[in-house]
Image 1 (cartoon, rainbow, N blue to C red):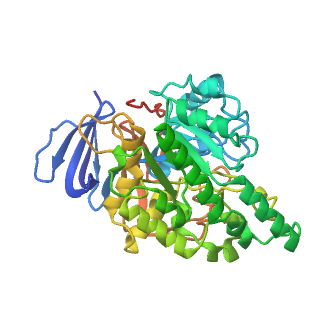
Image 2: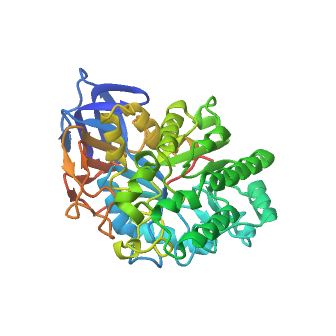
Amino acid sequence: MYTLLIQNATIINENSDFKGHVLIQDGKIIKIFKESDSFPENIDRVIDATGKILIPGVIDDQVHFREPGLTHKADIYTESKAAVAGGVTSYMEMPNTNPQTISIELLNDKFKLARQKSLANYSFYFGATNQNIEEIKKIDPKHVCGVKVFMGSSTGNMLVDDKDTLSQIFAESPVLIATHCEDEETIQKNIIKAKQEFGENVPIKFHPIIRNSEACYKSSSLAVELAKKHNSRLHILHLSTARELDLFDDVTPSKDKKITVEVCVHHLWFDDSDYDKLGTLIKWNPAVKTKSDKEALIDGLKSNKIDVIATDHAPHTLEEKENTYFKSPSGGPLVQHSLVAMLEMHHKGIFTLNQIVNKMCHTPADIFKIEKRGYIREGYWADLVLVDLNSPWVVSTDNILYKSNWSPFEGQQFKSKVTHTIVNGNLIYENGLFNETTKGMPLVFER
């Protein structure tokens, strides 16, 4: 039985921090020791974590790894490798691949790919359409993270815009419903208005005006209305506006909420003043909006109106991104840099370490009911990350691991560095080197 000891770490977990040691055996945490405790001898491997923090592995509940069918942008192997290097040990991947994941057979195909290629743990969303409610009813709640509903045509023909179909999905889905909320009618009206003024050459700074707060609020409020009517388990993805915060509960603990909400790193980091410098590189749907929206989202995390921090990691090639407004696709790569970006916000005094761990590790496990992950607890899977909070480095093409080989953070100096990532008790990443002999596991849900 292989044993691994992480020694002398500052452990950040469950709203506390203390110095101690963690003993791992056969993939699981078998003992957590305080600094003064003695621990067994004859350990197979000891990692000295003096001066570093130890946190649970990050669980990213929204990524697009582009496989199958769009692998010129990314694939499960490359993006899971980048994720692990960034401290992400588990992810939930979206259905807008080619073919789209809109049948149980196609969903199973993705799981087969991940078993062969993924360095991190994984689950996959099932994609809703206006026609596949019978397939949705077949979803296995124990092994599928959720059903994804695009209530805005961010990804083309996966738009679910039929009111009767939406009602049926909210009434009959056996799993959590995750929604992309932007009202398509509002967006199209704003596009017509922008084209009347600029033709096809609309400046990128108009992106948050075209995909504005009204479009977001109108769609989010509909999702909340449907969830309350049908007593559905709803999770709204990538919140981007201050106005939408009024829809959510800041009193009930996240694990007990029926309606939860996520914010993405880019909506916490960038605002509309960054379009002048970064242009279409920060074109996302929903759009990066105003500084006041960004500040409200930060406050929403602190008040617990917002439950989860994720990435919406959605890579495109640099050639695709460096295009005119209407031709440049929305989305960008983030999984390698999400944790260090949030830790940079900690260095700036915006978030505490425990707030970051709560929103990136604990709460995703709680609200999706992931079995034995998201915490540093005895008996849990050993998904763990060691971070040096004082090891500055600069993002560059030499150290970017995304297949697309670019990042909106290029040139940014981060003070913190992920040094070790352990997945299911296996040391997968250590100071720039990877162990690819073992693969991640499918997530299991306690439902």
